[in-house]
Amino acid sequence: MRVLISDAASQETRSEKTESARRRYTSAAMRERRTRIVETAHRLLGEGGVASLTIRRLSEEAGVAQRTIYRLFGDKDGVISATVVDRMIEVREHIARRGLSYSLPVVFEELDWMVSEMERDTSYGRVVVGFVFASEQRELEVSELTSVAHARFMGWLALQQAQGNVRTALDIERVARDHVMHEFLVYRRWALGLSTSEECRLELRASFLSSATLLLTDEPREAYLAELARIHRKLKALTPPGAGPQLREE
Image (cartoon, rainbow, N blue to C red; front, top):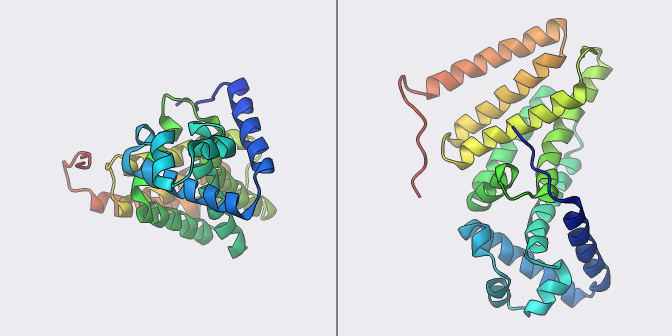
């Protein structure tokens, strides 16, 4: 699998424009307009993907002048990035408020919550998961979207290292990156209608356990393998014999 990386110069130009605009337009009225624009863009993306979001339509439905959108975000891509960045800030703040160490039950609870959040905002969730696999390169969005999964894995790893349960021969960062992409493959199956939310929750747990067992040693590894086998049995019970993947109906 290939992680898509956007042109660095283009990304820097877009980031500079957006950051410059954010520094210059900080009045209460402008902040309110920015919120309105992002919320409207979020809805439009959920309704029809990137193609449905134009500056003209966004201007009309958010009730702001087109020049205001350009001032605040630079361009359409700046608006799209803002919807992702703002949403992931909310997710990270929610996780930080809990202040929990990443034991396995905490990892599972957070993964279940992520699926619940996608269920709550299904159309937008499908759009942004697609960014990770799209031919159009979106480095900033992909970085934001994958940051939570990476932080979760590394938080769990730090706890295991403190307990002396981790083998040292493997490239840990590579294992973490591979795990993050596998987690998004599970989200992608859900987004395409190839798995139910219940299956998605179980598949996310199985994905985490599979990656974790690569790094664990001795009794902890055996315990994780036993839990992985239990989840596999649950997944098998959810899939009737001979049943193949079915795309959701639009």
